[in-house]
Amino acid sequence: TFSGKLGSLECIPCDSVQHLKGAYFQAREGQGSCEACPAGTSRRLGTHGTSVHECLCRENFFQPQGLASGAECVPCVVGGVCEGVSDVTQQNAPPYPKPGFWGHPEFRGRFYECDEDRCEGGLEFSCHSGFDADMASNRMCNRVAKGYAQYGG
Image 1 (cartoon, rainbow, N blue to C red):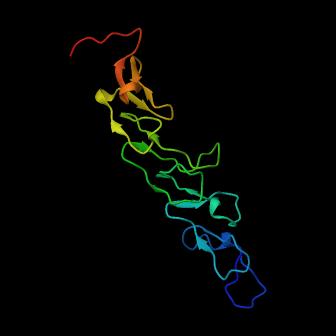
Image 2: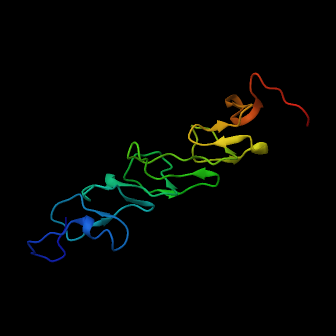
């Protein structure tokens, strides 16, 4: 909460000013204003605006350092899907490739167009049926999977 008037006995919850512009919090008592959440974030539903850690990535944004909360989020990268806050964990969700893009699960900030649309993308960084990831060369979906053969060009 905060009080906009010096000496006032009334405090206003920071979540009541959220609708004005962005999301706000105040972690310290006795303050005269609320602080804005970091860029690219909004406050998690059901929170009371008492900590910067309630500020999580908005949809189409991600946290490049992989921090759980309380840090600036940046716009999603080309070829990536950025859901913002995970419905399951209520933490920042890491980006994953769109269909037709590939990347390495350990480097979630970079995605590349996949050869001949072999990549399904998705949370599991999956390949279309018949193709496999070649993690040794850091290229996904460029190897014919066991039990399949490649014909032509």
